[in-house]
Image (cartoon, rainbow, N blue to C red; front, side, top):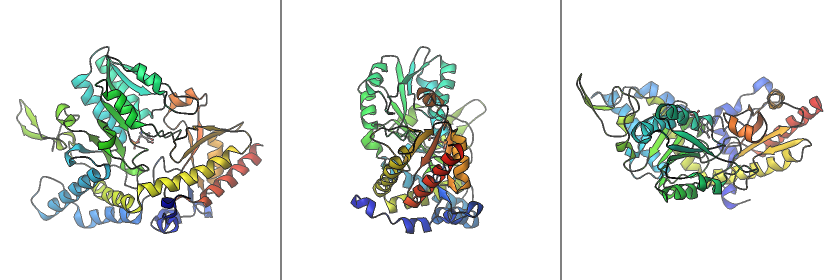
Amino acid sequence: MTPSAATLDVARIRADFPILRIRPRGRPLHYLDSAATSQKPQSVIDALTRYYEEENGNIHRGVHYLSELATQRYDETREATRRFINATSHNEVVFTRNTTEGINLVASSFGQAFVRPGDEIVVSQMEHHSNIVPWQLMAERTGAVLRAVPVTDVGELDLDAYEQLLGPKTKLVALTWVSNSLGTVNPVERITAIAHARGIPVLLDGAQAAPHIPIDVKAIKADFVAFSGHKMLGPTGVGVLYARDDWFDRLPPYQGGGDMIETVTIEKTTYAKAPSKFEAGTPDIGSVAAFRAAIEYLERVGLDAIHAHEQLLLAEATARVSALPGVRLIGTAPEKAGVLSFTMDGVHPHDIATILDQNGVAIRAGHHCTQPLMARFGCGATARASFYLYNTMDDIAALMTGLEKVREVFG
Ligand SMILES: Cc1ncc(COP(=O)(O)O)c(C=O)c1O
């Protein structure tokens, strides 16, 4: 056990998550679906409740007590987010609804400003649909073309192919940091350096990175990073789009409305500076306020310790699941986050998930919004167990008991 892993007091952590005490169908809950959405600690639930009980007002527009307090809470989370990702300024942090909205924002605004017919956007075969479809929509509007970095048999990006895909027509690289289906952690500093050497900006889909890996945007030098609060202990309805330096000044607004303007006449509008320029309308203020509690919780526990703990769980689960007859692991890269995707001969992943659910074990089955990746591995779907700071070896034991049942039923 690594020293940092030893410091993670999982029993104490679990006590902070009230939902882990529910008993679905009279059995203990074994929640192995945090890649879809994480559970929330009491401090986040309390922050959300407190917001609506004591702090609710609309931001930026009022001089009264509640409006000022709500504005303060909103701004405090922006500063906490800046600190969490080591951004230079809180003006580099725009709140969105989720990762998907952040990527759509860049695809739309960047496309309008910089992309012309015949230009190319580089994605990969392992992208979540959220990092494919927005670029396709943009390509339809601009006449651009998508190119995809292939994925190797173990589930890594083929970096030689990546380099070869980059050329004078490449306008942007948009890649995932951590694959939600494979668990692969991509070498983002290298990816960014390769693109930047050719003057090409990089967007990273950080949806599966932010909950598990310390993010230092200054070190990785990515131009854009998008992630979701709900996968990192926060409430639904809040996401983050980070953009480096002056990118937000150079991009046109994504949506128009209140809060994003400087002056409006019927003839013409001038826009507010970022981040307001990209936050049209009333945001999900309560969720943003509570998101700060999620960030502080992760900072208290420490992402290094969380990562080390997940690696122990992943190693145990990988060894035990792969020893079962007829199991094929999808995603065996050396650098992986806590995601275990697999298939079992003769059993549909939905049947695996259904039988596990009867034993209180929550996993996910399906294409995980990565259909091109499923096609690459020749399977329509996988069963996926994903781990987080509150999971234990008990959860893995329950997973194994459930998988034995699957084998009995389908054996
Ligand atoms: C890698 C990755 N990208 C993007 C998303 C989309 O996240 P959201 O639905 O929160 O926008 C997910 C969600 O599972 C994901 O895993």
